[in-house]
Image (spheres, rainbow, N blue to C red):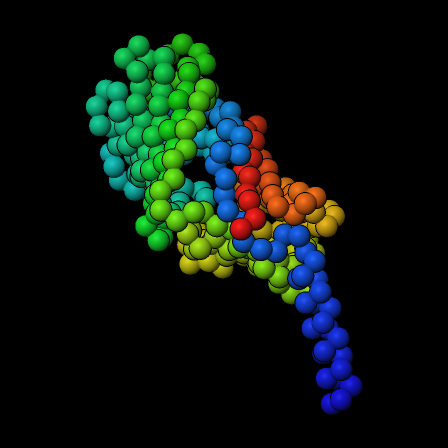
Length: 259
């Protein structure tokens, strides 16, 4: 018993020292001003019979009828889409939070504006207004579009990412606003998300490149969704996350400040 107690004390001491020196551990606040705006392509095809094929920033295509009836997407989200008039459409998407998106096409059919309103589990709202220019000639909402500007607005509680120690050298990532939770060791194994707001089948696998850099792959139902690099600055004050969707050339970069 005495030997076991001494061994356990040694393990706990080592784990505490790891937690104290791990630069990722802490609470991080999303900084929209520091985060660079991505260039996004968006494709919309007319399938006939008021059916649309929507290909967004992740490269995933959703085929849906513009009748307001909800469907399940391959990633597990619930989505509905409806035509309001000849220049406006509305999408409602529910995953770890609710998004209401309004599509507006300019009278000359050259500009598309997407106005997204996100509502988190705790009631806070975020807004994103993205303006797209038409890449090739077309009519109405149909065609290929490329983003030219993006404006982000946040109200309510700041978006927080909380990172804690997990296991021997793993980490626990949680986003309270979205009820997201991932617990993983960096051993190449797949770990399923555990948050109340996470969609069934979402999982992650990762490795430590060095003390300040992580590489994490996100999966949905066993298929790669995106890869991310988490990098903490040398002074330990900034976390930068670079996300690359598996089916798109878009790159998303978010900057987080240590609280």
